[in-house]
Image (tube, rainbow, N blue to C red; front, top):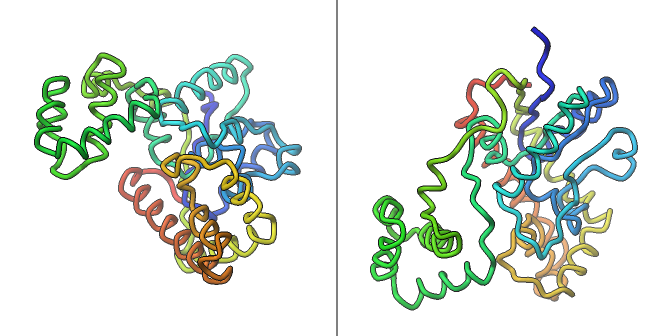
Length: 289
């Protein structure tokens, strides 16, 4: 039986996924495909440690830096972008290395995720304002008219899920739970190899700390300064990237640079820990390296 044309390489930030993928791509001619929700954004090359221009000359990279910070990409949008790309590579008999730390992207590939159309920012904001105005009980009753299953199952005080459910129902004309019932994996069970990079915890945290120092040296503050000039919605995914808010606080004169760097180091370690936990719980049977 021929080897699968897709290899999934998952793991926490600063674990060496990109370096491993680049090494394999140079050996095999494979295409490296991004599965990191923050490395999608063109505005965040340094802050997300996206593959450098030099690395991208050594192997073909796809879905890196393809989104503007003002544009909110969802898991569904990434899935709709990666599916035709994988079909294209399969038709060319080319191997794909799908690399990243965003667990839900791998869930979409291996287990399936609802292909829900993107909800406009204005619609999301309107439902959030309605929640604040009506209060949870009245808002949940309103949601029950459009999506009774969501209204009955979403936990108390879960504002984010409640408002999303209503925004989806009102924007698409279909209940969120109906969309979720139509999930299917993008890859067949025998269509991929898989690997989780799981370094020693202390060594990983040390790499996280050193990465923050390197980011500042490479221009992270300039990236944040450019985002500040655009006055983007702070709830956009790109604006929630690790480092943006802490370095913004420094640039506004609220904290010293070293204090901001310490905060980013801690946030980076926390993010890596959450990723380790997610893959340990959601992909326990994947081979480790």
